[in-house]
Length: 69
Image (cartoon, rainbow, N blue to C red; front, side, top):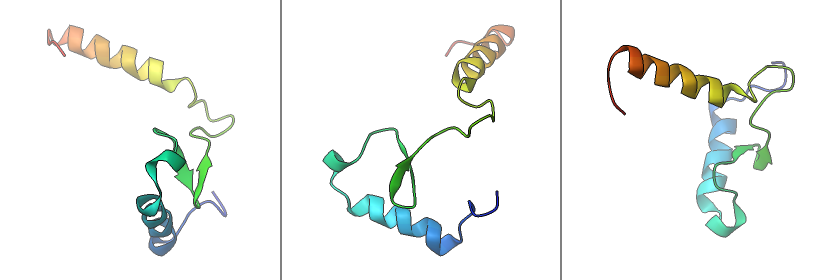
């Protein structure tokens, strides 16, 4: 993770920058890093298809516990 982690101040910079942008300039649901839109998933980390897997696990847990969403 060398060079990827940020101090609190550096992380806050993008949050403050986002708060000051017009919503028309931003992409809803996007991940922003250093004042720019960035990929949500790391290459070769196996995270790009994880949402479907997580949803299926949650559905199975609800079923096992006899709960409804």
